[in-house]
Structures are given as structure tokens and as C-alpha cells.
Image 1 (tube, one colour):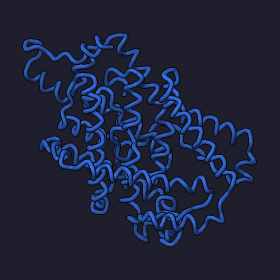
Image 2 (cartoon, one colour; image 1 turned 90 degrees about the horizontal axis):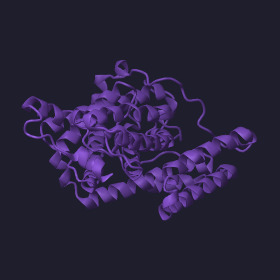
Image 3 (cartoon, one colour; image 1 turned 90 degrees about the vertical axis):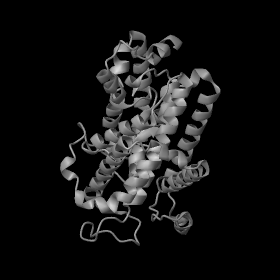
Length: 377
């Protein structure tokens, strides 16, 4: 592994590249690492990439649900942006795609943005959100957020504004992350309790709504939810404690999904009589082209959502990228990373993707399973 890292870390000599080629290598790092690939590096990257690919299937679907989008858009967002990032990004272990924090920002920012004419069925007093009632009108707004995030990040990279993220204090980011974790956790309780909970931007209101309807709890979804949650937590601890089981860390969620699918298929009564819900049909085929769905007239109402997603997403990604780069003895340029993420979001918005950034959990798995170059992404 050390030899492979040294091979990829090697910088071109003075006579190895012309000034123009050096500029192209800076903008397109793929020109640097692609010619240096060996059979051993490709093998290591394929194993790491397949592992992360397996992991992102349940993650992407759940993050799309957090953002208020149908499940398939999480899968779309895990396909196109990583390919673009591999061409432009400098981090060799960073796994780009949908993440929980940006998904929450998208949901919080787009909630209530549709007008009465666009979503006549929506009433603030009811548990159903605009995303649930009017998905055809809500989903394009998420694509537009990705487009604006991409443009912001590209402009920021050209103006060399990557350093601004360093002014975000650790207490601020730590508090934001902790708050996001609490809100995400509460938002998922409705699936375990078996009844709809009216959404609110205030935690105390969400807790009030939960306990106000606690008499409506469905015991079978609650029991299954607690069992699955306990197994996932046990799996995580076992993967940390025993090196032989470390692959069970990323594989655990997928295995739990497969077991859950098999259980519902084998016992239809769970859905028919005991209120256990399932995802349902997911459209097959490649991600649809979404350029025609982008309405520039809606920029004003999604701009603040795009700004927060841009800053928080880039901050999360550059922190992970720099940490992994330092561990393996290479450097990551903040401006180039901003450009890579910007182009990834821009291109992704044309293919039914919502905003993406570097994922902490998938990057950690990518690194631990032996990723050596951007090919793993």
C-alpha cells in the first residue's frame, strides 16, 4: 500500500509536463492519477468502490426521504455526481453523494415553498407535507437547489473563496450537527410508531405532536423498528471491536434491508393486517434528464436553501478530504475541491439529482477498505 501511495503522490518533474499540461492537470486531476494506475491499485479501488456502492443504496434512499423526495432520487444522486467528482476532485478516498445534513437543509428550506395554486391539497394543520401531496411540483425545486449550489461553488472556486469556510467556528458546526441529528432522528419516528406526525421546525412542537397521538401507536412497526435498530447498533459495535468483522459495518444496513424485504415477502400479513409499511415500487432505468424541469423564475424562493447547502456541504467535504489526505501524505487544494463539488452539483442537477457533498461515513468505509485513487468513487 505504501508503494502505491508513493506512486500516486509523485509529482511531475520539470521536464515531464508543459505549462499548459500542468494547468490541465491542476483542473483535471484525472490526467495525473489515471496513467499511474496499476493492476493492484485498480483491484483495491474496485473492492472499495463496490463496498461503498452497496452501502449507499439504503443510505441514498433514506436521505432522499429526509429531503422530502421519492426514494429513487437518492439513488440518482449517488450515481452521476461521483463520476464527475472523480474527474475533477483531488481527494482519493472521498465518497461524494447524498448526505443527511444537506438532505435536512433541503427539506427545511423547501417546506412550504409551493403556493396554493401549485399545491391546492396542502393544509398547514395536517400532517402531510407539500412534498408528499405535490411531488411533481416539489421535486424540481430540489433540482434547482442543486443547480444554484453548483454555480455558487464554481464561482467561489474561481474567486478563490475556499478560505472563508475556516471562519466557521467549531462550536457552531458542532452545535449544528448535533441539532441536525436530533431533528433527523425525530423525523424518522413516524415509521416506527406507525402514525403520521405533523412536521415542525421546532423540536418541542414535534415532541408535543408525538406524545399527543401516542395512543395511535402501532405495536408491530414499533417492535420491528426496535429490533432492527438494536441489531444495527450491535453490528456497528461488533465491526469496531473485531477486525475480522469490519466489513459488517457498511454491509450491516444492506443485510438488514434484505432480511426486511424477505420477511415482508414471506409474511404478507405484516403489511395487510399489522400496518407495517414498505417502500413500494421504484422506477427502473437510468436517471431521467431534468434540465427542462428547472425554472429559473423560482431561484428567489430557493436561494437561501442553496446558500446554506453550499456552505455546510463544502465545509463537511473539505474537512473530510483534508483529513484523509493528511493521513496518506498528499495535499488537497481547497479551491479545486470547491470547483469539483460545484461541477458535480451542476451536472447532477441536469440528471435528477439534488445537492450532494462528501459523506463522512462512506468516505471512512472507502478508506478502511483500501481505496487508493479516485477510481474507487
